Image 1 (cartoon, rainbow, N blue to C red):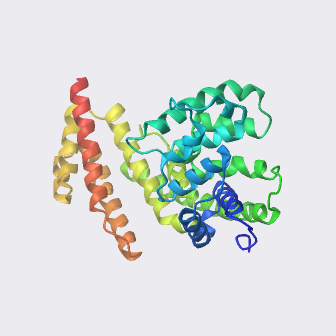
Image 2: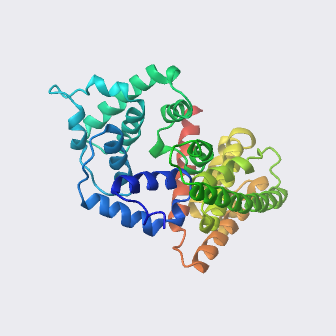
Image 3: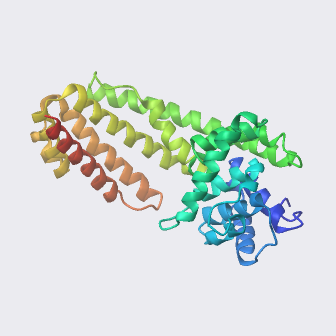
Length: 327
């Protein structure tokens, strides 16, 4: 009904933007796809920098091509951006964020990033809330590159202060956030228990406890409820790599590390004979973990994990080369 009550394409764009920044785009996938397809097919009669940049960013974020030529109207004959747009900080931040959807061979968008950043930095101290906070966040990490979950945390209280905001949409975002928070906390507890059992078995006392950080990476990228399996595997992979990293930094000599690498490149239970005694349990557990990943993915109709094994082997091989260079 929120989409049906939009009277024009501009209102739809603003609604899509709000939904995405509130972290609930996964609940409106069909409606967003339909709205943006319609906006892409029909040229809008919009003239403000803010609206042009918003359309540009939304469409490009969803894989719909828009030419950088749409910004020509804001550039002079020499190709530089007109100074008058510096009096529009909301338009500038929209231009800045939109330009970060650039692809190779688009120097005009690189120019837009430099131009907008320079003037936003100059204006930052004079801006009111919440625009000042939004500019500060964007200058640190532009909107197309930020973690959606973190943006939702910041944006919910800001959206509540926007003129014409939808109380129903805001309430939905808060309810969804609380629901997912309970799911994420449950998963983090499960990962912590898994790690406790894992570390107790392999006995690498020198390894750092990075459970929360490892889970946070996957949580920020794949926060939707249906991505539980993705988050869990992602967190375990990061933990496994952290253990290898700590073995490199603290536990193993270069020769021992080479032996472990030789076993990992073979990726077979029989290769355990190559591994130093105190790392045999770790190597066995590593193979078991990847076998469990493979079983879980196949059970859920996903692809096998051969590519994950290969990347893991490459990472480890590269670390050996780095160590040998250091020595």
